[in-house]
Amino acid sequence: MIRLKDTKDSIELVIALGTLVLNFLLVYILLYDPLSQFLIDKNQPYNIPSSRTITAITFSLIASLILTSIILLVEIARKQKIFIYAPILSLAVLISICLISYFSLAYPSSTSEYVKNGYYYKMEIWWNTSDHKKTYKRWRSITLYDGHSKPDKLKYKLDSLSITTDN
Image (cartoon, rainbow, N blue to C red; front, top):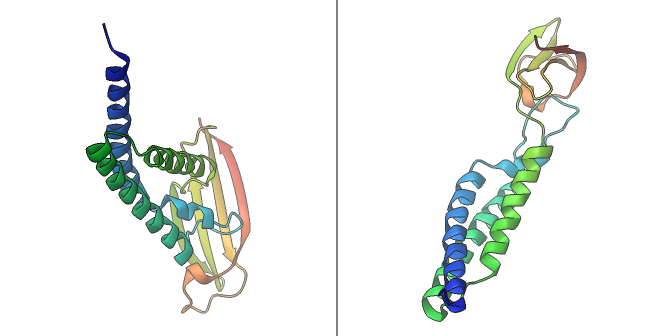
């Protein structure tokens, strides 16, 4: 017969080990900066600008995950109890990353850039999308391109848009 105490200890052990593995994976994922998807401007060509705020939040989350993992290990070793905030933080970060990836723009499948008639153009193409459509977007710089400015610093307007069905 299984005793209630043994079942509770087993569940706590599974939660603790699962939290530690999840925290390891979350730190790895956060190093790829998924939170920067908040910075994408949908009215401009696909570009993730750098932000010290997002970087600070990302590294704070990483530090919090590592700290709660250490506290979790210490609590289990000393008191045979689970540090409940560790799995709660892990789940909150996991849910946040999933929501961000679901609601954020996808990377274009192909991009190209060129200068024509004094303007800078960016072409973006998405294919193999879930709705089985190809989307073509051509962006043109608002001002004439001087040949020296960084293309990512220019402002663009949508010059043409085409959505076709994949065959």
